[in-house]
Amino acid sequence: MNLWPSTLRAALAGGLAAGAVAATFSVVVVEPTIRLALAVEDSRTAMEHTHGESGHDAELVSRGMQQVGGAVAVIVAALLLSLLYAVALTRFRRSSNLSELAGALVVAGGGFAIFALAPGLKYPANPPAVGDPDTVTQRTRRAACAIAIAALTVTAVVAVVRTAR
Image (tube, rainbow, N blue to C red):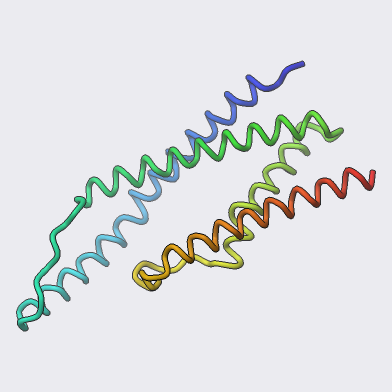
């Protein structure tokens, strides 16, 4: 029986729901804190300006557009991750004797290890304005390498377990 269409539909629906929840959380919970931080920064900039220091930089993208872009990015990322999950789950089902639930949990655990645990352990997120802007590219490459190494490690573990059986 071909489970691909139902797996794909379920994964994309779940990804869309997860993206919508994450975007809503960002607007409702995270945004007020960002607004407070921006108010502090604006007051600091205003104080520097009154003391004769350089003026305020022009805003390239409005805060509203940043919020919309962030929400769209979270939803798109959730959809892409859910699509990746659907592909991995379908492939895993074909070569595994595990139950539906056990297979889904194994694939989800592998995805968590690859995309969240490994990069988070090696390169924890920096609060805004803490990281050195000159090293953004270097830190991004390192985080991507951590994901690639984790993916190779999970793939190797799965291959070793299958070979051991």
